Length: 171
Image 1 (tube, helix red, strand yellow):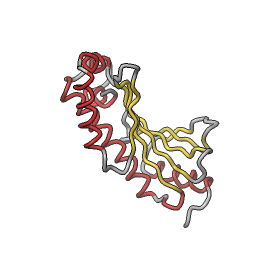
Image 2: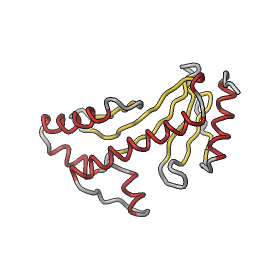
Image 3: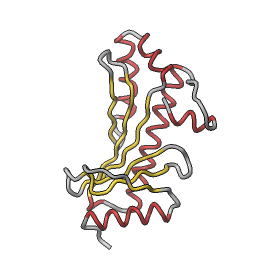
Image 4: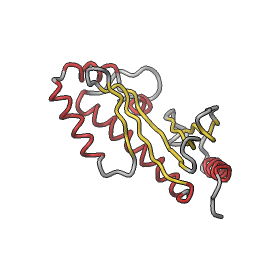
């Protein structure tokens, strides 16, 4: 079946998420035709979003992101601007040829506070494979960012959850 409408896309995506046992919660969002928050990986505390922005007809966006841990922000602040830029450049170079995009939210001093990843495609490319390919790519990008920060600055102190859940929540 060809998916040609946003309504068909929403129904297909919800069906595929349910088939794969994801918890998909519909989010009220005036800027989106549909917006789901899902557990990815299945059963984890980590969340991704699947949405169709009303401003861009036919576009499907998969979103994921990570907040930088307080200890890592403190470590970044102690670096010189040149050292910080070199660290960011390493990540940019590593992520350059991936099919998803990222955005680093910086403060006025050039210190990263959050990093958001997105994978976009249009209705004409919507398949179950494409959906889960994008979710996996965003998740792998998250793991890369967390690992990059932890390798450089050490594991941050994280409250609650298992070790794996704590590591996946913040970079």
